[in-house]
Structures are given as C-alpha cells and as structure tokens.
Length: 222
Image (cartoon, rainbow, N blue to C red; front, side):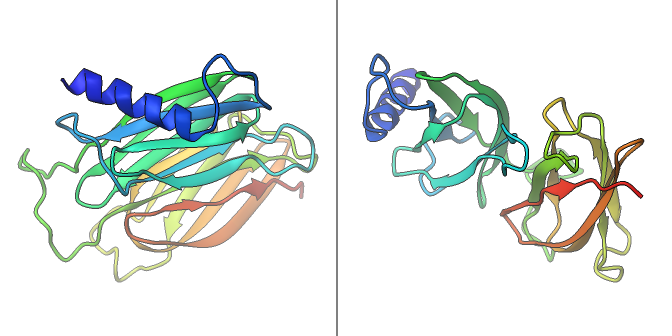
C-alpha cells in the first residue's frame, strides 16, 4: 500500500511540473516525495536543491519547494549536473540526498525524514535546545570554478550559549566544491574556508532553527 502511495505521489509531482517523462523539455527536472519514518507522506516539508556553478562567475542553481499534502515536490528547468537535496520538517526530521540531473530527463527522489535520537537511544524529548538547522553551500576560486577538497569550518560565535557543547565542526568539499553541515544549533557562526595554493574566505552567518542556511564562498589568494 505504501509503495502505491509513493508511486502515486511521484506521478503527481511529475504531472505538476507540466510534462510527462517522455516529453522533451529544457534542461532537466527533479520530482520526488518526502515521507516519514513510517513511510507516510509529509506535507509542508521544506525541500531545497543546490548545485554547482556551470560557468565561470555564474552562481550555482538553487531553489526551494514546500511539499503539498501528499508529500510531493518538483523543480523545473534544472541544469544538468550534480546536486545536493535536503528536506526537513519540524518534529519529523531531516534527510539529504545527492543526485545527478540529465538534460531532457526527470530525476526521481525519495527523502525519508528521520527524527533525532537522544543519548538514551529513544527519541529526544523537547527541551530548552531549539531544533537544529543545517548549513550548506559551495566553495569556488576567483574564476568561479568549484574547489574540491577545500577545508570548511563552522565556528560558533555564541560562546555562552554553546558552552558545554562542541562549538565548531569542519569538513571537506566534494568534487563539485559542495559542503553540508547538519544538526547545527541555532545561533551565530563564522564559516571559514581555505585550500592550499588557492586562498581563503570567511563569512558570518546566522542559523535559524529547523532551516537550511546557504553560504557560498570565493577563495582569494593572499
């Protein structure tokens, strides 16, 4: 039954984009459905898609969509390439996926949201800590080309608020220069990025509970 609901949801999303899978269209498209841990559709979930820059000086493609009652979402006119997709809904959880979009094709995605788990192994009860958000973006060089393997760090600027917790985290960009930090607590942060032989960059951001914050940095030489 759940499989039928999922297939129906994806079909509705494809139709909402205004074409069928066999119909030619500009660029590509992404269609999908957001479900909870039990496989039920999640309406009102926020889904964002972020890609890489395809030309020098061009900002990467990004868009947001709020799922309808049957949990479906869709993005039209998506340039061919690799993308990060993040979906989330308060009190349900978050999910992410990496996809590749082809010209004249519809890429189907299923995002199954997972709730946070506490130290005791069960679902964490609501406490004085707000729901976490996420930080995602792309690192490029001065020519606008993505920088793979760049180090990206997110450092909390709210020293008192984050006392007793890890105040920072770091990661490396993928081959498209993309990075993502999940479960980032609400507050003010400094995003730092650097790559040997390319340069450094930094930007101050504010993370909002339950939302995704996008930041794209251009590395500049010393």
